[in-house]
Amino acid sequence: MKLPISKRLLCCAAQVPRGARIADIGCDHGYLSIHLLRTGQIAFAHACDLREKPLQRAMENAQRFGVAEKMRFSCADGLQAVDPEQIDTVACAGMGGDLIAQILRDAPWLKDGRFRLILQPQSSGQDLRRALSEEGFGIEKEALVEDGGFLYYIITARFGGSQPLTPGQQYCSPALLHSGDSLLPRYLARIEQALALTLEGIGRASDPAAREKLPYYRTALDEVREMQRQLPR
Image (cartoon, rainbow, N blue to C red; front, side, top):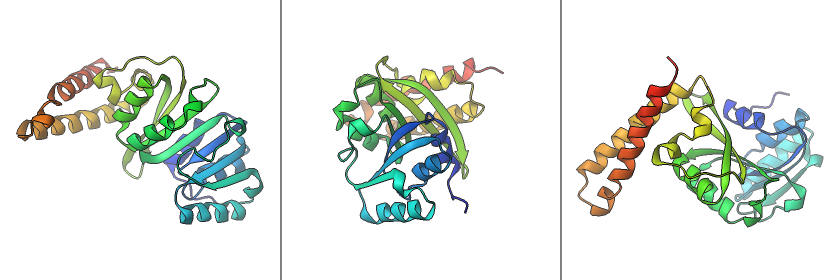
């Protein structure tokens, strides 16, 4: 029986070290954990979701694909039900970057270099990168993947080795810029277009609070354009 897992989640799975014990936060249908267990890549998964129906679906899928005995399931907010002694890797995929950042803040025990974070934000990636930097987490790697006509990025981080990020680096971290990923030119072009549209919208706004953000977005756009110029031709 074939597991209907997306390219996006397969890219997340590729960042998980062999033999890991993961907490799959916001697990939804459970496909990430099930794939990792079916392939023998991990030894244990704790699947958590705030909603009962998706968690029930994940439990049914785990039974269907024969891995339920290697999983634990919790209907819980973020990492509240996770025992730090049972896991070494945290995966958060498919949520907004601001929500992922809050989940990490609510689990101070993650500030330990033994925990690997694999994060795939659907939006607000710049907010997540900024939060990681401010909370002391270093971004070790970023990977890009195209799925369904959209570009997604997966951030691998752990506590320690953090560095301040400039506005442009909050949209494209040094790890991503130097990754050599073949999708990087398209990603930067997309970011440049989004920032240009944001600046245009703020420029038309009459709200003083919105206009206060102009220097940040101008700097981010200038830096992203410079990153594009630095790419190998």
